[in-house]
Length: 273
Figure 1 (tube, rainbow, N blue to C red):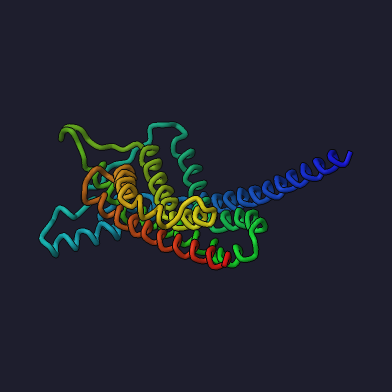
Figure 2 (figure 1 turned 180 degrees about the vertical axis):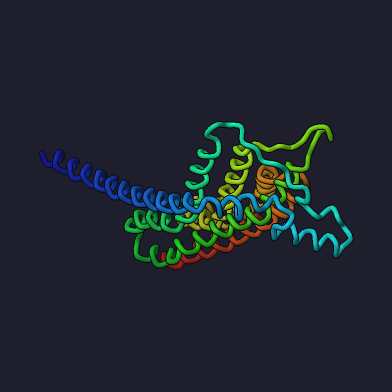
């Protein structure tokens, strides 16, 4: 009888945790929906001034590359000088695209709140010293994610558009990019860049869990370099210049992760002494 009562208390505790998690997820979802509705209302500005802007030669990155190209006498650095045409071939294509873009914008803008909700669920399970060491997790995670999004928008997207937008098998074949293809490429690059820039945060929690150590990260530094180059090759056009530009910040993030892992391990050892 006592065992049955104990099992019931454990079960209720587990169900209570699920209930708390459910409400955190509901709040996160509502925040994404609210920001998505705002994004849908201002879709003209978002499409014309943000999403479609990188394919214009007047875009900040394109102009910067072009000025630098003139400075070093390398006119080939003037990218996206011939904007390609984007077409829609589906009856409801533009409407469905508006909905998808609104949701992506809603997720990106609501990310700090979403992460805060998830952190609020995880935080009570931490010890007091762990909470103290993890102070600022929401802030730094949000900053890294937004930095990754901006990095993808201002660097990876223009280079990707330049390569695929200007590449052709013959002068007789015109590039008329489907709207779905353009948007899927745009959103996948943006989200991938944001998630990749979370690498220091991931390393921090893995180090706290004892799954990785700074020695492990140093040992597999060369292997990580290969992985980084592979990731850069996937999310950028297949040219060496673009891959190097993308790889450099990823390598820097990995090195920052090693420093973070060192500090985490050092603090854990000091607490055991």
